[in-house]
Image 1 (tube, rainbow, N blue to C red):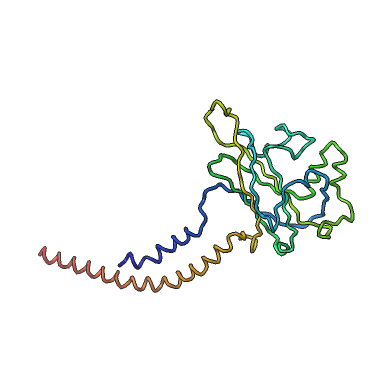
Image 2 (cartoon, one colour):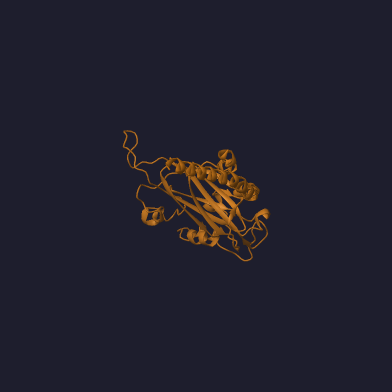
Length: 262
């Protein structure tokens, strides 16, 4: 009977486990503010060819070759690690993604989250960073070709595709380094590493803290937990009867044993 009465307490954790997604991947998350900044025209530059995440297409899947084992993440794809200063965005161990936050359906949200997930079977560490258009322009200014600087310069007035002189566009830089120790094989040198597959998801944050993908789960849990809280006093009151009965039986048994002893 006690097991049956505890059924609601057993079922609630099972429900939570059922609705939660199975953890089969490592995850890196970065939250950032969608602040408006001056628009920068990157047409005719390498930036214009970067993949874009936006309201209609907020998820992407890529594969990136990791930097060699023991490389500090902050040094991956930097000049001291051999990156060609004439091509500051051509490193094999990083990916640049444009984040289009100017969609009308996202304009009411000021905070966003970028979530990166990769298989737990792929030993790697990732570093996520968010860049403003001006920061990208500064990085482009390191190019030795003056034409590239001109293409990325800010002019006034300079309107974006939405007709505004400001933008909430951001740029994500994803760097990856190998963290696994592999057994040498004839066809795969010990220093070689397979490309790391990963998924990148861009979402708005409700109330500045809640990712959009978690909203259905929270909405489901609120009534479930509310019902459990309302039912708890009734369940405890019902169980109290059996607890008192068991205590009384225990006292009667102890009394009977003492009488037999005398």
